[in-house]
Image (tube, rainbow, N blue to C red; front, side, top):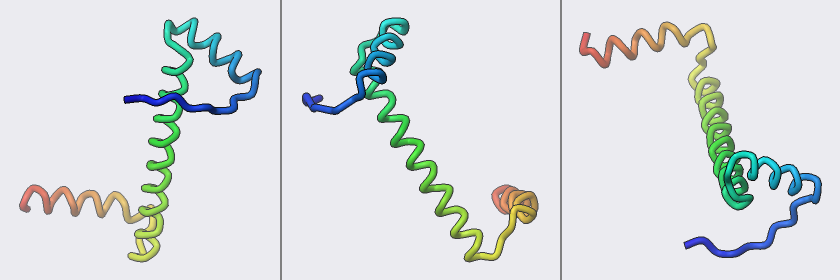
Length: 80
């Protein structure tokens, strides 16, 4: 169940969100919730990218290795 929260949103931003919500047939709360979900998903994707970069450095892989690694992985998955 959703709870009521207080957020400070600058007047100009709130006005733009209200206008966009009305144009899209959504409530301001729906727009805000969607924006927060997208922010969290983007943050998670950035964390995953950071992890991947760290692993590639640790393993000594470069971008040039990617096609070969993909081909090797596909061969292994096919049991070849």
